[in-house]
Length: 230
Image (cartoon, rainbow, N blue to C red):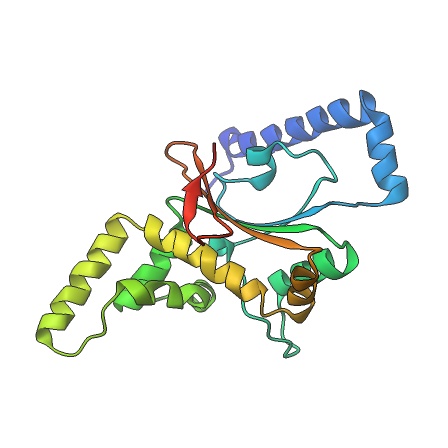
């Protein structure tokens, strides 16, 4: 396919954005960037967000450079602690943020209309799977579906399971929020996270962003239920 000028538009927009960033922070506010260069980063927050292009954590929170350490992956998932020598990008980011940067808060930020969660529902439903990496990854949150899907024990139960899967596919926000809870629980399987939480020097948070309305929901520390944030 021949190259067209339209293909260059997204890159030109990004380059213009970089110029705007440089003008805003390096030309108009050079002291703040110089401080980050000379003293290093000292963020208080680790944000674990989704790779979805519509829910950039820095844009949603209007965070300034140096304020937030961010790791993003498909469906904003936290795997359980598993130091087996394999490649664990999210776990490495958690370790660096907690042990090295010593953040005070870890936030798992889920969102509505998450394609990764839709993929998890389809996977559990038994639909054909052609992914090499996505399906094994989203299966981290598979247990989030268990309370909503009855076990199959006969033809009648199988029909009920099918109906439940179809309902969840139409309204997956229940599973999106349940997956956030699973990730917050998985954070506590990391010994260095649990140690600091129990010492009172680290707080864990579960958030869910409604992409349709712009509302934010958060897990209540006492009830463990999601509630809208005013």
